[in-house]
Structures are given as C-alpha cells and as structure tokens.
Length: 591
Image (cartoon, rainbow, N blue to C red; front, side, top):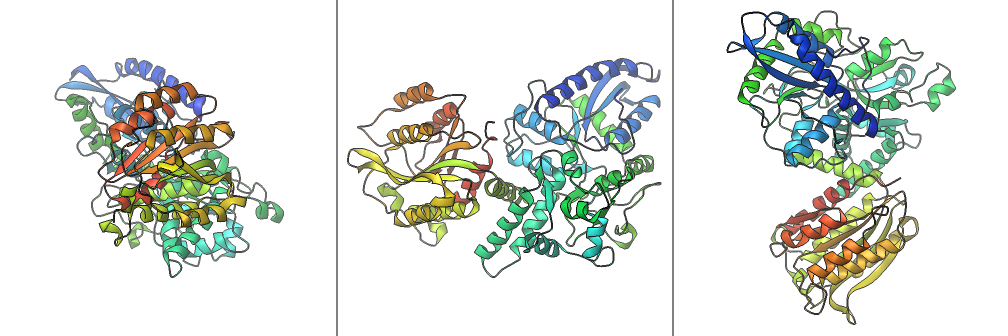
C-alpha cells in the first residue's frame, strides 16, 4: 500500500520526467496493493471490485486510513468485495491526464505524461479543477461528483514580523489592503505558485482580481491596477510550491526578513505544515475579507467508469462522511467540509471560529467553487498568462470589405473597429519584453500582394507607440479575403528572425473564407507549411474567426500542422476574450 512519511509532508509540484516516474511508481504500487487487500476482506463477500482513487497528497493519508479500515471491516457492495487503492497524486498531473483522455483543454497545464493513467475516483484539492475541465470540454463527471469531503481555507501567508507591521493579528484586513501593499511605491514582496497549475494560487489571484476591479473610476484604471498587481506577483512566481516556501526568510535577522518573500496565497494546511517544522521565522495566516474560495477537496467520480465501480465509489463516499474521518482530517491539518475541525486540529492564530459563523460552507454543500462562473476563471487565468509571459507575435488583421459590417452587440461599431479595439486592449496587457508586429490583409492590398506591413516585429520597449499608432490608421478596403497567401507570408516572416526563449506566433483575425482566386490553394498552403515547419523552431498559428462566414473546417488543418488553434465566434464583440484565451493556450517557450 502507498505510505506517506511525516504528518506534515509538504506538497510539491512534479516537473516533467519526475511526473512520469511518479506515475510509473503509482502503477506498480497499485498492482501490489490489490494482493495485500486479499488478506483484509472479510469472508461475507465474494469476487472483487477494484476501485482506484487518486488524491491530493495532503489528504491521501486520511483517505487511505479510512479506506483501509473499511476494507478491514469487510468492504462490500451488493455482496461483492471492494478493494480500494488510494494513491497520492498532484492535482495538476491528474488534470492533465483527464484533459488528454477526454479531449479537454486546460490553459497553462501542459501535456500529460505518456504513462499517466486516470483513476476511477479523483479527490483534487479544489472544485476549480472540475470546473475548468468541464468548461474545457470534458464529459460530465459521475453522479454526486463534486461533493466536498474536506476543507482548507485559502489564506495569505506572511512572515510573522511582516504581518505584525500591517496590523496582524488584531486588525481585520481586506484584499484591497493587500493590493495597496503589493502595488505601493515600496511594494510588499508577494509571490504566487503558478495559478494555472495551483488551486490556492488561483483562489488568491481571483480575490486579488476582484479587488483590482473595485479600484479606480474607469475600466482602464481597474485594468491598470490589475496588471500592476499581476506583474508584481510574477516577479516571485514559482511552478513548485516547495520552491515558493523556500523563499520565505530562513533567519530572524532583519536583513533576511527584508530580502525574503513577504506574502503568498497558500492554504491554511500549508501554513500549519510549514510552522510544524519550527522554522526560524513562523508564518502568520491572514484570513482576508472577503473570504477567498477555499480548497474544498471534491469527491469526483470520473466519466465512463463501470456501474459497479460507481456503486463502490458511492459507498466509499459515505464512509468519508463520518465523525471518524473528520478526526483523520484534523491529523492532516485539514477541516471537515463544513469548515469545522476534528479532534487535535491546531488552528493558526487568528483563524475564524466555525462556531461563530466564520468560513461557513456554501449552501449547496458542493464545495468552494459552487456558483462560480467558469468564464471568470478563464478570464483571470488568461489575463495572467498575457500579462506575465513573454512572446514574439505578428498580429495580422483582415481589412476586407466585409469587415465594414456593423456589430449589433457592440453599439453599432463595425467588425474592424471591434477587432482594433480588442488588439489595443491586448496590447495594454503585454509588457515591454514582448516583440510585436502588425500587418493588414485583403486582396491586392499592396499592388499584387494581399498583405501590407504596418509595423515590423520589434520589442515593445521601442515599438509600443508605433503599434498603437499603426492600429489607429487601419481602415477597411473594398477587397476580398486573401487568407492563404497572407498566412504563408506571415509564417515565413516570423520564421525569418525566430527568437529563442519566447513563443513565436502568428495571430490572424478574419471574418471570412479564402476568396483569392489568383492565390494559392489550401492544398498548396498545407504542403508549404509542412515543408517549412521546423520542430526545433516552432511557430504557432492562432486564427480568430469572426462571424458566421468563417469555416472552422477550413482553418483546423492549418493549425493542426503549425500548432495553435482556431477560435471562431458568431459574436465579434467577444474577440477580446478570445484573444486572451488564445495567448493563454500557447505552450511554454522552448528552452
């Protein structure tokens, strides 16, 4: 059976090869544990239902102990013995495997390892994983999936001396207070675990984004506050929680405290676990108003499992609703699903008392993400990706005659005006490390050429005003849509000065099919792209289709060769959101 050493084993994030090794080990352990179960099952049942459960590492010991006790007592469903194997698995790794198996897309998660096997039941640390998978296209989860079996509030962790300077533990602080601290002239050194890969980081980011949205008197001011906060966080971000925790001061010397990490969104369990190691500078847990979405540990039956396994999963879930399981959770520094804790739980100083109504469970009992709009998560994670990563991009905008058409959902603005506005908003998110160029296209736009360079690809540190002014000059033409010739030329242009360490891409906006009778055919375009494509110097092609005249079937073969994805919307007013999604779905730059 799987064992986890130490009561407060810190969670870590498994990179690449490590993840594959961990999954391989998981499979081997599963094979051995079924045999061990034969010694435990009582004589009153026959046969065997094998139920595999993957759980977030911090809750796995409590789940395993409860499942083992159930087995020792003769676990069975309808007279058939049940063998349960509970393994520790990082939520991001399982999410990648589930997404791959069910054809879903998850921004910032990356590809599942080739050896990844999805379990029958998954207990990640947050319902946001399920929400993101569903909105990304995964099949609906099994009956009763998503009911919470544990909870850990998301807090802002600060070294105690730093927390004391801003009023802890007596002063009740808000996310707006934290936003001011992070974006002041002498900012608090805040960090974050990559929020697309970490549920506590995502919860903190959502709360900070909401606070930024409440600042200023205009959307532009709110966006500026948001971008400022994101970029401050990005200077101390990490893909590994252990790496982030290691940046907190390791000495009580004032210089070490001043130079160490000053704040990070973590779970209450993280803070308790960290402090249990008796560090030189303990962490304070700040429970900010409004309370962020907690880690809620949903019990998720994965799509497509056999009905007998689904019955076994339901029986196991009932085992996890007992007072005995609450006490097992307390030993792992976790609360019950209603926010109340079991015997032996050691709450951090300043933790709200559940008896006083603090940290109340959502009315539905379906965990911390109940009622959360998945588009909010998508927008925040997309904004994070755009504002904190670097890239090299050629933006290509359709100026054919059909772009003069007015958009009913955009106060009568034309398709081209809506597109230019989205490009300007996207430009504001990108920092000076980006390199951006701008083209327009139609047919015979530049003599016999269908495309025209407005601004060459250069770093925004010297090119931002030129791009902004270039967008302001764009006007519709009377031509048609010279899509294929333009795409090929844009791809070659980006390939000319391919830049290592960045994602090199073409982002093309269009509202129609290829209409250039004198240009190359789709077959010729695909053949040339296959010949040009260099796996060592990848170039992503992202095509944003606007309106009902765009053919996804025409676009998908193109992006299948180059990487990237076509995005098609009937409502041109949504292209700003789509542009953010497109940037967020780009893979990490090659190293």
